[in-house]
Length: 460
Image (cartoon, rainbow, N blue to C red; front, side, top):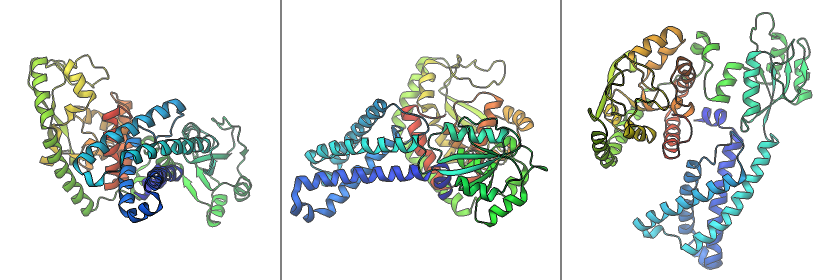
């Protein structure tokens, strides 16, 4: 997880989330102190700390589910306040259930009420402070961009438009005017003392983003900077950490061969399989009432079978049958296979609901138990489309080196895709997952999937 935390999630955001957790914990503890007084608080401090920690964990989970840790775009303060109120409201509901089942962990309602009032004010102030940090690009890493063309534009646009990127560009190096330079940053021609430029601009990293490096890359100057301890990073590596995806169309095979990652240890694969089997058994057991109700509704809504099976391509290009609840009319593909579309007219009334809520995906847990799929991995595609896409998209076949998943990095990061261009964009995320896959990333994907399903946020 260090790679994921340090590169995809900026250190500032991690610090903010931890700081907010401390604020919530401190607010409940302070309210307990006021309620019990110094002596009573000290006598029962151990229990009060553990109970306050439980409140903190549940509160931060709901704050996360209400998208309050997504700082990519500007948020209106009133919207943040409403979502924070909703998150705390759901926290109360969950705590009520927990306290009903386990009365010994209960905190006095008066303490909770006072603690909520304190933490709401404290969190509001903390978030206003962090908004100022993001707006002023404080505590960011300053980078010098070597290049002024298409690749430099891609990096610059992402940094300038993504409020929580954790980086700021302080200058360009190149022989032409930058394609994208909204803040009118200085341009330094090739041949200048790069080490001195870095010092003058107080840059912390150099990102080499040249469209054509032949005969243009200032090798000697970059070497001097690297020896002096200044990090020099290839644009593909930087882009991977910045966006959580890999530049498919700009990546050559040698980079994939020699880059770090792609570590599929036996221990990881064994643990992943254990988690898959356990989660599938539990998931099918918990969702049994939903499965029965859905089956009845499908049968009454339209003619045809309840389940829909379809051939998909899995690990090592092995074909398998994926099982889902039928969400389309039985004549949906009388003219042959076609891409599924957003707001597809072939979808039935019940099918539309079970698609939005992802209930149609639940039967795939049986496929996970069989071993053809995992909970987390690239989405399995149909053989007809795989054959077509492998001819036109580089590295597309690499998706089939691991088991496909019910959910995955591409599904949560990219909106619904239904074209060859969308397949390229989703492959960028699939390759990132392949390169960085580990159990903590899998857990992160599952949590984001839950958020997506519950609140219709993000991709899928």
